Amino acid sequence: MADGIKPQPGIMDIALYKGGASSVAGKENVLKLSSNENPLGTSDAAKEAMIRTAHMLHRYPPTDHSALRAAIGEVWDVDPDRVICGAGSGEILKLLAEAYAGPGDEVMFTEHGFSMYPIYAHACGATARVVPERERTVDVDALLAACSAKTKLVFIANPANPTGTMIGAAEIARLADALPDQAILVLDGAYAEFVDGYDAGLSLVEARQNVFMTRTFSKIYGLGGMRVGWGYGPQPIIDVLNRIRGPFNLSVPALAAAEAAVRDTEFTDKCRIENAKWRDWLATALAEIGVPSDTSTANFILARFADAAEAEACDAHLREEGIIARPVASYGLPHCLRITVGDESACRQVVHAIAQFKGSR
Ligand SMILES: *Cc1c(COP(=O)(O)O)cnc(C)c1O
Image 1 (cartoon, rainbow, N blue to C red):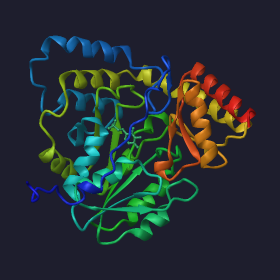
Image 2: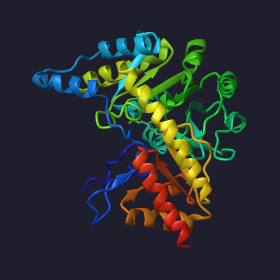
Image 3: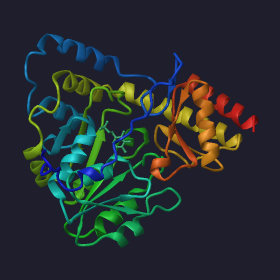
């Protein structure tokens, strides 16, 4: 008996994260549109760079990620000394929570916010403070009204997942300006590269001491399987995170693939253009058959149905057709399905299947 063995407070409040499904029982060839993965795969340069590391897998990776940070610095015009790299941007978000929040503190995010945020909050023993949105969009006034001396971190994905909506630079600046002294605004830019002309909050990070930005290689770069992300922020915060980061958190192949991927802007430009084209086509085609969605700035759309029952029935029909979308009831959106923007053929298949479903009712 070891009744005295107990985890830290908060950990048993965590509901296990459920990733997007990748199979349907009895179906061989499925179309996976449940995890916002890149339909064009990964840049060839990144794949080749990864393969070239095969002869050095017995070596430990570098601890300072200097080559990857230098490449990020060049491509995004940021100071490499204020870049930190992690095993996915998830690791960076977790380090922020561990470093800046604990029992008695609040980690704030919004009603339909990314489901990893409460996990990071609970894991460090802090309280998750969930703030209402307005029409599936982050509401800066509601966030500011909820702030207190306990607020340590405010997590906002812009564009947001699973809603696909975003708020403007002026709204973000207004939020950063009015936060209490001890709070950090974390701008999760997982989908930022899909938005033409959006700086993901970089200029705000440069201008302020309380704004931190995270980015990922999992989405537009098509490297979700390699687990690489990065953060950019004020030097004091970067220094704190580096103290608790595992020294070998990124593998040799992951570092090589990410460095080549970030430099291959031709590939990401192509992905951004294709995504925007087929996202808008998909949203318009679905709206025409009675399935509206908010204007998405990301690589997915949030399709809205009449009610939860219709969304569930449509999901079941899609699975029957070998198409996997993402039910988002756990995000407080039981009447919606999140659908990743695939390539042309994928988008046409989804619209065809949903039209069939609608026509049969
Ligand atoms: C996909 C996603 C991420 C990326 O997580 P990684 O750990 O970098 O794979 C981060 N935030 C949001 C909102 C996401 O949807």
